Image (cartoon, rainbow, N blue to C red; front, side, top):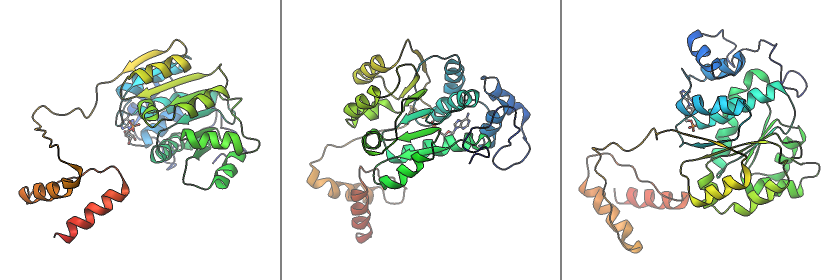
Length: 293
Ligand code: AMP
């Protein structure tokens, strides 16, 4: 929390990393400072255990600091959250104000993680965040908005809900917009909500769009909301190794459980991981497998 009544502390203060410990790794701190961010932010990055900027951070941070719109083709694991958060925090330090940034995320969980990363990187400078996601009481979120946060992270539906129903809340002074995981945002049919949000935020702002893939829909969104953007790209960190053998089976939905049990029995003795789409199917499969021993 801020120690200056809601204002972000200026560069002149010597706020330390969250642990209040002196910086340990001067070289690492310098490598982050080279991106163009101040020492407080560089120290916060190192305090998170980051030793040097990731490739997407190296490319994107200086561009945003130069006031450019950025398209980042990067996946989770690339350090993309730091890539958009660091220059925004730097810009916020340079010109502190409430409702400075809006980050749109496709899921609740991702929104919470993004807000945590903003708070961790901004811990030394008193950054305030609000998370606007579904499934959580509107009133509690309205109270956090009344505290005039610097950064709002949310899913499009709930952000529109607050813009429509929360008295006194608007984004007329917004300076930075981030569309995170844009391909997933669009796959989840948030197009209409994004359009509604774009209509009520200033055109004069910086925008960053991150996506794992550049689909037609993402390209269309890019044209609608970015100005003369620079594209940065990183090779996927977790691309599949060539020696991995991948197989699939087409089975009628009603026999899926049966085939799964067969496969697990065949492969008994080795470890396996099963990915499912919903909490409910996770629960059902684990019940079934437990009952089958
Ligand atoms: P993200 O791609 O933003 O989802 O980040 C994935 C993970 O990488 C998170 O746990 C971050 O804390 C971590 N991370 C981000 N930047 C760096 C960095 N420069 N060095 C090491 N880890 C990082």
